[in-house]
Length: 200
Image (tube, rainbow, N blue to C red; front, top):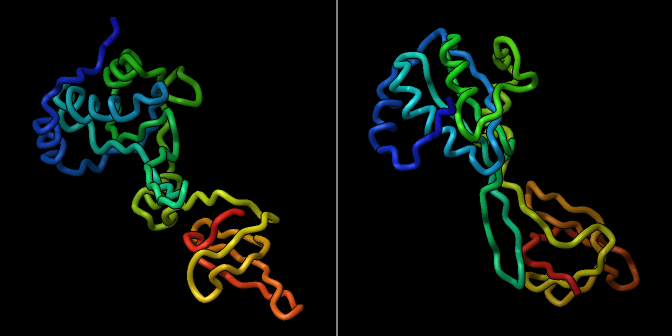
């Protein structure tokens, strides 16, 4: 029998139940493989319906994301991008019954890397890195810059406005672009915010 996550679950009630659960010292982090695009639905099911079925055995769920910013036609757009598409991280005090219920869920293909035997929990260092990415402790907002190294660009703002140069390097994490200008016959590298630059 396949257990389908309910879309019309009372999400407020599920959140209250999830928040009321005390931190269980026996919890370990596991990764569940979901169908792409269903990560949030699977996470809500686990922290709602599954938690009510196994109180004290289900902890936090996590679908790690990062912010991606890019410019198009002079406008800046920001969106969230999943760091690990198709994966949901969940704290479990695992039992055979919980394993069977998760594997029977709709939109879930099991526990990677092998969907056989008892799932292996993530190590402390691995989970610390993943949590750091989510809270921003390790990764900052990523900027998607449209142009590439070697392209000719024009500066649209700041002290180098209307200057034309060639992109030497791009720092997406800082949102900076290093451009080589030719000033008075000499090449001068200048680092500029990507918002002040556009392709020619």
